Image (cartoon, rainbow, N blue to C red; front, side, top):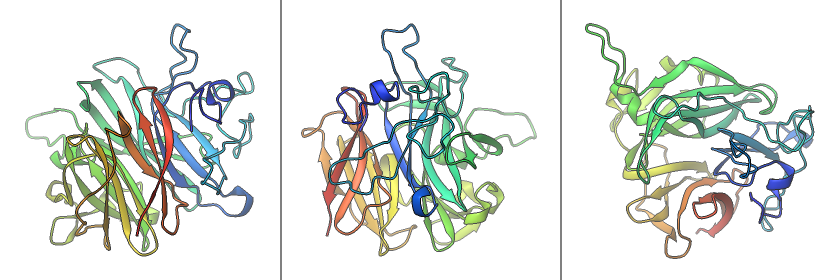
Length: 334
């Protein structure tokens, strides 16, 4: 999908020679305005430049609904909120950054999208503020937070009231951090039955998956979130949230097929991308089915389901570490 070897030639058309993730969601609009939006993580352009044209995150848009031959992304056009990517008039082939970051290692190295969804025609991204990268599969976050866009992903506003802190603050007599926020540093969104279900995992790739839900119209109100405790949905219970899938779960996505939920994630211990299914968001989730093992495609991570997948064909993106770009894959499911 991305890079100089992709049919999209994102290197010359978007100044994207390397990137990862490719989180996809339906923009919730109709007719000619209906698209799939795709959010990417750290993005590089001209690697011979001093800063390698690094952006902390980028976005592409497409209306391509024939996934059998890949995903085609239209050209970016300045000011056109339905073109291939947000760009400026002065740089029409340079996909610009969505959400800024300090870019200082040990304080805030980058801000990475982890989930996206549309509600009422408004786009929402949940992003994590990464304090520092560690060894393979390990990093430390400051917080996760929600940003919204009212113009189809062209411009974004961060919402401070949605910040879930994950830093060791301790003031005597003052509760600074809900410990359970640590389990919602990375997210996966899916809409169902009037709710947005919010699946969360901790920083890095070795934690369990938890789940919360919130009425669609209250996605920015953390006080409206209910958490699955293993027995019931409870308000104001982030610290009591119980795992719905055990560790290790990394960079997950969840899709409602119309009949059941499908979850994809990376299993860092096995070096595999796995799938589970359930009839309810809180589970019970099925045993894992291995889709891709590292012996077939090495360094593959971050599987995100295409929201227009239907029937037995499940399409998803995944990132490949070797050339740091995003692929489109398909699996056939019963």
